[in-house]
Length: 141
Image 1 (cartoon, rainbow, N blue to C red):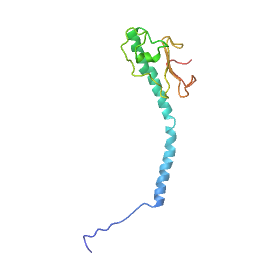
Image 2: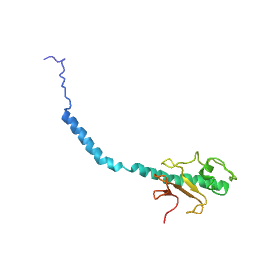
Image 3: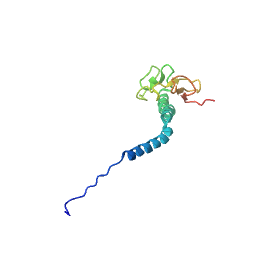
Image 4: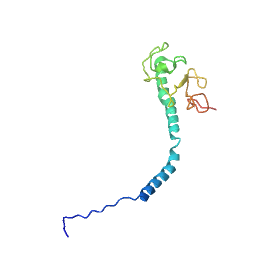
């Protein structure tokens, strides 16, 4: 026997083995996929809550500290990115652009508010109309 010869063994997967792997992966995906369904909508709601309670609220408070009052309803949130007529001591921009909610709609703003004395700030939610899915800066009773 020649020591320079190397014995090579060719082994490959059979069609049945490959099908079993595909079936196992499919079963695992079918079990895990329902757990992730709806997570993107929860994430959008979380982003809207953060914008309303922290991001835009902070910009509004800074505007109010500099100018003595919140922007009027007519001035809206645009007053946070460019000086408005009623701004006495505008030191902005307080935000870079007019904010939109995660569904692509502008946030709604009213000052003075009907639910709060200072301002109402809310997102119309996924459906884009005033309904029970709105995300607000006040608590519904």
